Amino acid sequence: MKWWQETVFYEIYMPSFKDGNGDGIGDFKGLLEKVPYLAELGVGGIWLTPFYPSPKVDNGYDVSDYYAVDPDYGTMADLEAFVEEAHRHGIRVIADMVVNHVSTEHAWFKAARSSRDNPKRDWFVWRDTPNNWESFFGGSAWKWDDVTKQYYYHSFAEEQVDLNWHHPAVEREIWKVFDFWLDKGLDGFRLDVINNLTLTRDFTDNPTENGEQRHLFDKDQPGMQKMMAKIGARIRTRGDYFTVGEISSDKLAEIEKYAGLDGLDVTFNFNFGSVASRDGIVAELARMQQVYADGRMPTLFVGSHDMSRSWNRLADGREDVAQLLATLMLTAYGVPFVYFGEEIGMADFVPESMREMRDVQGVYAYEQALQMGKSEQEALVLAQEKTRDKARAPMNWPEGFSQKANAWIGEVTPDFDRGQRMFAFYQALIKLRKTADFCESGYRDFEVDGEFLTYVRGEHLVCLNFGKAREVPNKWGNLTLVLANMEVAVSEEIIAVPAFAAVIFKI
Ligand code: NOJ
Ligand code: CA
Image (cartoon, rainbow, N blue to C red; front, side, top):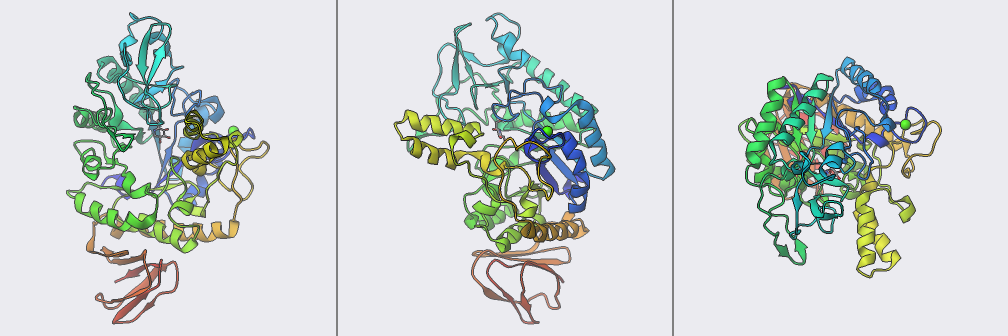
């Protein structure tokens, strides 16, 4: 058993978790203060979003120096003190590694763009004429460089320039980066858009379907599986570290094939966690249950910093549904990732004007809408749909997020009573998950009937009702209630499960 197979992870969006120095931006000092809170919740691992120096066009996913801490978040000593404190509480820490692209402010790119024969020129992807590839944020993925008269490739914002993984020096440099942070005591990495690495020199145009580009040739390029295996192996040879890959694909087979001993440890499946409504969730879990065999593990999550919060998107603002989702995430087979604030039922923040809009994706959507002739009001509505600011509002702490300054982004009104109930429920689930039943075994009696799901893990029976109230035959006999989000009637013959009930019995 590997440590990460029995760990509940907790994602922390760096600028939004806790401000320790009163400037309105989350930081390592604030994080350090909150380690006991995380220990009380019971999580065993933390994923930190990027904390490296960055112009923050994409809030740190545009790294300008891989070997330091951004002053907004503190110093290297602050990071070390936090990691030490987390370890003292039995919590491991993994870092977000953004190695598909760097900031245009990174020294490597500054050198590369200084002249065509700079030795670092080919660490990036240059062309005389662009092909039709679009950025994942919208618009062309190619940007004209007026100094050297060529286009460079950026699969996200134009300030996030893609590294050319075809070049052996790039690989070598990134190994050094990995080593540096493992030597600092980190316990592994979350690898950003890792199946997007540019590995080939074929720039085949992407096809268009219903007016939208299908990203066929700008990700999952030939050689990707091998590269993933190489990255996984490289990190594994260093020791007992954990890797989780962010895979931008909606094909479960692709997502699954990058995980396991011939790849990274696990990969995120966005069909499960980032769906627009809870309708498909049960069916997706059923698919995952079939696909993941031979000790491979899926990941389980219902939110992140890239989508609207599960409270709004999946739970319709209902506490019972939020608890149902939590039960699914924390009792199913896989590695769970709780997004900060989920455990207190935090809701979305929606910027009311462009002045409040912080996310580059929201800003892009607004600009593109204006270019297409939409009115400012229409453009704002589109930007509100696209913006990832929704999930990035600061954590609702009883004492507030910041001692002095206003937060860097708008806040959501707290509901502390709800927060306490949700926290207690999460805490109970996480405690239960630590027992052998939920770590070691897969499923028994995994059964889906429409929106009703039951499975047995070890000695525990889990019933999850995403549909209408129903009665199901009790084929397990003597059941003892362990945890539920509402009252459930059970006899020797029948279990009566109300709509949105989540209930765990000991068999
Ligand atoms: C995925 C990250 O989660 C997202 O926030 C970021 O914008 C893109 N990768 C680009 O790095
Ligand atoms: Ca701060």
